[in-house]
Image 1: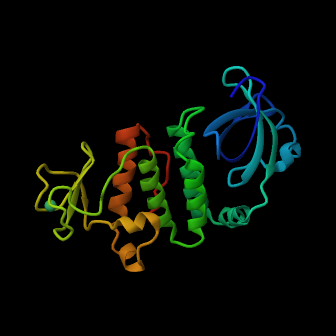
Image 2 (image 1 turned 90 degrees about the horizontal axis):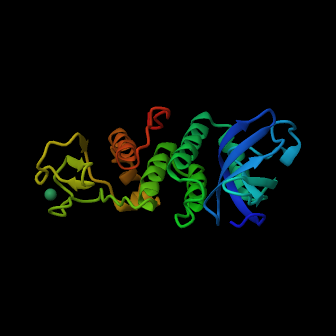
Image 3 (image 1 turned 180 degrees about the horizontal axis):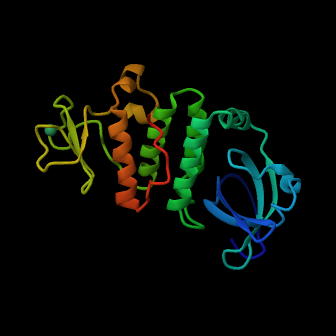
Length: 246
Ligand SMILES: [Zn+2]
């Protein structure tokens, strides 16, 4: 963005920090410009400023004026009239769903640097995941989100079969975090701290598996494995997040 240039985009607010007495510094994940940070002058001073829309769990139409360096300014912000905002209103009423979605926002804000993420299309990953909440169990949507975000970041793990023999029947399976390798019980060599009681069909990650496949997912083991992957590969500490899988 060039100084003075105004961009218009759809965005999720993923982080908001108080700045001075009446301003806020926002981290926005936009549809076409990746992560954009901006100052919202007067956002704390008056609820009416920006139409009271500056909240998490709103799909926003924003206008941002690029300043010098990182100092962008939020010029305009309103709610997009879209079905997804009706859906988000429902999510806001559900504590567990809200906690999960806020943990996704927090995760993205920790991983994607300012001005980054243009080519990852995380905006649509979020949109798809939010829509999936209305259809699928939350634990599943959460695990699919964590796995698909790793994919977008270039960490492509195959949990569908043994890396060595390509077999799917010799349970349990083991994941070696070091090399991102997944082995069946016949092929794994070093003792591994991540065991999964079964392999996981690739169809799960696109929600195209049948219900039976979902029932076979070793939920807790998989959540631990994915969270530890974020720590190992991206340096993200998960201490501050509640576990979503009960
Ligand atoms: Zn094997």
